[in-house]
Structures are given as C-alpha cells and as structure tokens.
Length: 293
Length: 248
Image (cartoon, rainbow over the protein chains, first blue to last red):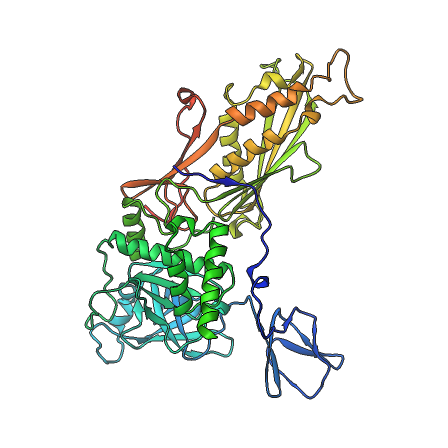
C-alpha cells in the first residue's frame, strides 16, 4: 500500500517560464477593449459609454472589423460539423437526450441514427419501442453535429459507420476550449491505442480494434477483457491528457503523442504528481516549439 | 458525491482493470492518491488542519473549551464532533441534503474515538468532577472527490496534533481554585499521543471479485471502512458500509 503525504507548495504557472512571441490580448469582464467606434461587436462584447467592453474572460480575436472575445472557460457551444462524444441521459419518444457539456442537453433523433445493418427505411413504431435496445441511459456515443437550434441546443447525427456507440475505454473530461479544431478527430496513435478528441471536451481513449466491423455499425460492444499491455498504454495516455489539460495546453494528436513519449521514463501513477506533471509538460512544450520553428 | 451513470462496457473495463491490479489512472488496487496536509490554517481555533486528497478537500478546526466532565466519566474530558457537508462540495448537499452524510461521518468519528487507546481523555481532565477540557472538532467538507472517511480521519488526526500546548495549558482568568494551569505538558501529551495513536480510517470497496482502496468518485462501489489502530486487536468490528449505487 503506497501512501504519499506532502505539504502544499505554491507552484508558479509554466507559461511564465517559456516566452511567447505574440502575446494574446487577455481581458476580464468589464475591461475596455477599444475606444474606437469603427469596429463591429461580436460575441462576448457589449457597447457601453462609447467603449467596447468585454463581458467574458478570454482572449480578444479580431477579424477585419469584427471584434469578439473568445472565452477560456466555457460550456461547449455547438457548431455544425463538430465531432462530439456524449452520454445518453434520457430515452424519449423518437429521440435520445445526450449530455455533451453544453448549456442544454443535445438531441439525437431516431431518424438521425443508423439502423443496424445499414438499412435505409422509414422508422416504424417497432423501431420506437426498440430504442432502448440500441442506446440506454449511461451509454457513450460519438456523433457529429447536424444542426443548432435557435436556443443553442445541438442536434446530433450518427449517419456514418465511424460514429455510434462506444465500447470499452476511458473517458477524460477537459474544457472545450483546449481541444484544437483539426481535419480529423479520430486518431490511431502509434503507441497502441486510439483516441477520439470530442470538440465538447470529452476525450475517449480506447484500445485499437484489430478489424473494423462493417455490419454491426458500431452497436455491438466488445466485452472481452482488454490485455494488460493495452491497459497500461490507455492509462498512461489518460494521465498525459489530464496533465496537459491541467497545464492548459492545447490538445491534439501531436501534443498528446509527444507528452506520451516524454512520460515513458516515469511510472504511470507518478505522472499525476505535480512536479513530474510539470516536467513532462515542459518537455512537450519544448518539442512542439522546436517542431514549429 | 455525484454518481455518474456508466455504460456497460465502461463498467466491464473497470472491473477487469481492478482484477488485473491496474486502475484507470495507473494506480494499483492499494495505492492512494497524493495527499497534501497543512496544519495551523485557521487562526481563531486551537488547532486546525486542511487535507487535500485528489479532488477531496477537508478543513478541520479544533476548539478547546472548559466544561464539566460527564457523570459516568468524572476523570476524563471528551470530544464533540460536528461534520458539515457544505453545499459547495456537491450539488446534492444543498439545503438539508448533506445532513445525513454529516451525521453518519460524525457517528463514525465518535465510534473510533470512544476507544481509550485512541486518545488519552484523562489528560483532558483539569479537576475531577468539576472541570475538564472539551474539544469541539468541526469538520468542513469543501470539495467532495471520493474517499471522504479516509481524508477526514487524516485531517482530524492532524488537527488534534496541531491543538497547541498553549490552548490547553494557558492560565486563564476564569480558573477555579486549585486548578494547576502551568502544566503545559498536557498539550504536548495530547500532541504526542495523537501523532502516534489516533486511529485512521481505511476504506475498501468491492469491485467485481477484487477489492480496492481509495476509490475516486467515478466508480465507487459498496465499501467498508475499517478503523486502523496501532494495536490491531482493538480494531473492533468493521463500521457499517455506505453504498454508492453506481457499480454492483
């Protein structure tokens, strides 16, 4: 039984130790962004006393004449085409309610779901009664955002074989602003596991399947025990993602992979210790800077 | 203590992991998360401690006051426990929601400190049948991240250790005749004994066919808390289990 006790130590944030060429313009609610009245105001700003004032805490983004403030800590705001990982909270008539870390529960309509076998037909009353057989409360799914309602609720669809119910693996919840937008969010990492980086901050780490099942459409979960070597890779990746998120670094396949490689000399359970976490993230940051420059 | 619904596949993954002694975050079944302990954090108490165990944050304050000994134990002082599960710890503690959990934890603390080898209550007596020290131990739950019993027992132990000698031996104006308050060794005795002999709680949960200690919030199952005392034969019966209904 290993039990480690320590005294709390004040830690200074890592971002001060590594300089950045272009400083982001960070604001807090109430800060004046500009007194120039020629700009159009976007999200996160409001006009008060002929000044543009920020209403959220974040970084100022400017596109030509449009100024908006992108919040650093926020709930997920859906955009059409995003990949999300969500958990079913309710089974209703003809739709499921999915929790995606946004202000309102997202909606997955029965008609937006692929039937097993890939059939294309109108959903009947039997399909409605069999909904719970497809997805129950607590199940995890990967889906794509189809539309955004006027109140901000997101409508999802799983109309492709790569989306659907998720099997065995580990879910990590981070802030949505840390997930970098990329061309693809499904990655098979060379270290031996796969990862789905949901835009809503839910990251799913799972063992790479040996062969892709086309018939099942992702509904039949594989409940066989995962091997110990795969488990170690998954736990190590999970700890690396948690340490990158704690140090507020952007999450994408390269950063996660570099962090994984930097953590190999340490034991898996040591990665969560604060000093080892800083060391690993510092090394990752340096490698990423070298790669860019 | 928000219970999260898990999918069948996730549950299977966790259960197999426990059987192979590798949990989701890489710890073995017997490993604890990192603990941070800080004493002397609250200035207007006789002793205090703050313990952070993963996401669990506990603050304990000990106030020493003069009182009358209980009738059945005229030579001893006593301890009073009060556990407050604040609403900022978890959403279900809002209003009176945290009272049940608080009462259960307080009763557990009373049980483990009822043992004469846990703490020397005779050292808290000032004059028999007339005056004694009463230690009011207040536990405040700041954040709930699993494994409350263990963290609270560590915090109470640290706070009792921190209960300073000056609080228990200082001369006060409301002394009664014959009371000898220059015996500062009393506070030191309390500190020395709580460093060595105050019991700690160790919670173990059954998952599938294996067992694991120090569960996080996500997958706590039925657990039993055992009081660990220096002499194992005085450990007593296991305390009642507190079920968390996410895993069978």
